[in-house]
Length: 297
Length: 283
Image (cartoon, rainbow over all chains, first blue to last red; front, side):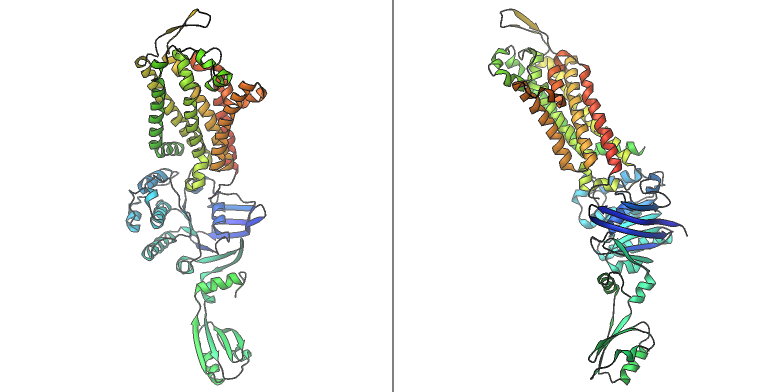
């Protein structure tokens, strides 16, 4: 499959600070790739290098088969910055006309549908807009040319739940139309709904890449078992679907991927007096992976 | 095509401030000229009592008579207030072209669109030059229209210190053009300096402070050097040296007027090349 974004040894240093460290990415056409990390992990720095706002200290980047500095490449991209800033007096209507006029030969798309969809008042100047409304302007501008590649930096930040839903629908539509999406986020719920693959970035390094199926696999259930006496964890080692068992002194935490029948049966045999179940959500996985340096299994 | 779109938008974003600047400069120019009827015929002798320091500050050199129409316009406008106003505007525009928007983050979004840094740099520099030209032309025209109303177009005969009579010509549209054009040249030079600093650093404070310091420092250096006779060798760096020495609104345009335009072009080229090669600040 064709690579839409390809980086090799991508590194950005400012003095002694290494913001992005030897990142290798390959994102194929039609894929939605979420770049996850805590604040300052290097997500936005990577986005800025894809867009040629800043240049790599080392390594190479290919975007849509070319360079982010090439206007013909940029014409095929839609970008939503983490914090959109436009001239203060510019209205949404002005912004659509101006940036639409810089289409680089791309057929113009009527943005009216997007304006209605996000409930944007395009007559108000940028200085009067709230954070959420600025976000709406940014989304309309990013999607209005039906770009082949969308680079979205924290796209739902500042949007209310209804608009977040609208955004996800829009994203799904663009994806169905074949667009590639690269987004940064630290909201796992958002990623879970839209992404095909995630890259976990930590201290500038791509700590781990995994598909959503793999990530969901990590969100398996855990069962906390209480016994009147101390029980050896190895009692659960060979039980079907058990991926991990830890604990001591009559308190065991058993991780199960699939049906829990075998675990319950074994617990009953060993005389368990208490059973608590919990399902880890992706946020937990995300944090665990971070704390473990991206190596959580 | 995209250059034209960027140029037009940049002008449109500054339409209101350009109107305010134009009205302000026109009012100050006409108001300053309006003092002429009450100062007409006052010889430079009164000013000489202030010594060389006052003469230097007012730009009185080569025996310019402040009581004559051209001498009056020189000391009341062209030797100080007028170029200062245009220079202030030039600095503001030169800074806004790159560093201003870069610091607010507005430049980032533009550069995510199908437009090159080269297009943005040249279109915006052209926009800055256009605004300077508009303000200069309209204020110059206002002064030309005011000449007959304020009696500045009539020759004046006065008595020199040795008792002889001297007839000074009235101001003409060509004189106003010369004075306005040479002031515009200085403003373009300083705008180029602000653009260069913005292009190299992307920092508004550095561009604003550096260009302002260059203009003010150049004035102080030239004036103090004139008064004390020292540091003469350094005054070539001051845009005021050739501007005040040549007094083009009185003595006509000289080739020196090309110097600030050349400096502006150097500022544009160096600023552009640096802007092409560096990372954006605060993306």
